[in-house]
Amino acid sequence: MVEEKTEVKLPDNDNLCDCCGNPLIAMEGIAEDSERVNVVERKFVVQKIQRQKYRCKCRAAVVTAPAPAQLVVGGRYSVEIAAHIAVEKYLNHMPLDRQRRSMGRLGLDISTSTLWDQINALAGLHEASYDRLQDYILGADVVGIDETWWRMLDKKPNKRWWVWSITVPNAVWYTIAPSRSADTAKEIIGDYEGTLIADAYKVYETVTKGNEHIILALCWSHARRKFIEAEPNYPQCAEAIEIIGGLFAIDRETADPNRLEGDEKIAAIEERGAARAERAPPILEKLREWCLTQRGLPRSGLRKAIDYTLGHWKGLTVFVDDPFVPLTNNDTERELRTIVLGRKNHLGSKSERGTEVAAILYTLIETAYLNGLDPYKYLVEATYAMLEDPAAVPLPLDR
Image (spheres, rainbow, N blue to C red):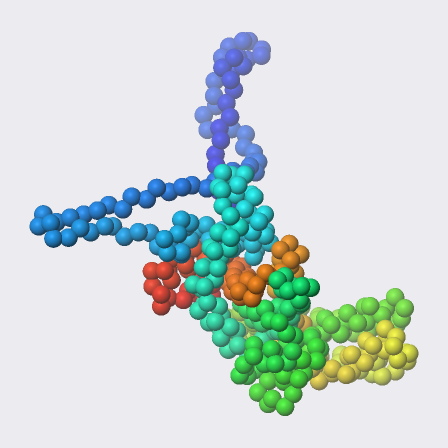
């Protein structure tokens, strides 16, 4: 936030002492300070660019100073405008037509199709960054994966597509596909080797079954939620919830190695690994015994919670032997919330290219945000770098 200093002085006609009527004298360096937050409305500026021409005395050649880098060759709009439109749509969830009207109130007459042209060009330039982020995430030992629905608006009736998300603590990658199938999941993870943390959606079991290179770890938040939903009708579920809480207490009391580096990371691995190995098995056994002693009708909330937990026991207990595996997939689910907010505002995509642009820009903006970067500044700086050197691929991890 920018700070500005404003000095407030008494008007001349009020600069007299109430007691004697003599002029008041300013006390040098002594003032009463306070703050207020103000807003300076944005503005759009037409930059008149004059490219100087040069010639030699020999008159053999005329040279013109180079033009500023342009995202759209011969276009009228700057890189900054394209980044602004992208951030407004994919971070602040403002549809293009709403942006058009907002810009019009500030004196910029621009069409929605022109706004689209800017973000389409921006996404096209950053496809290499998008692909590299996918490779970066799938190079990790533990990767979160999840999905949510998305509308394809050019189909009648509107067809339901799916946003898939893969994450690590400092990066997220999205793709929007017409299917929620195992084939789509396999296409996304490719030849991944490591641990996938997910919910109990059948597709993830299908993808990992028989694959010795992938371990499927399941999310304890989902198991816990089943008991919370059943508790109003089955008060005994409070005991199961309390037991599961003991697992979360282990992680709360130890540092997360996924968010540390160097010696601190090594120490955190040892600490969490030892704590889980010692404390988690008795808690899990207690929960398992509790589940086996309960009785409930086949379709009751209690029975569903118990069957879910015992039926997915293998995936739910992977974390015991791996300090890098989180208890939940909450980080991945959290990264899908921005997609859900966007879906509520701009409803979906009007074309397949629209899904690609959305996936690329959501990926770059959200990863920048995860790394504490200003997404707008990142997009501007990275775009200029790539326009200057097409081989450059500045990721929001490299800053």
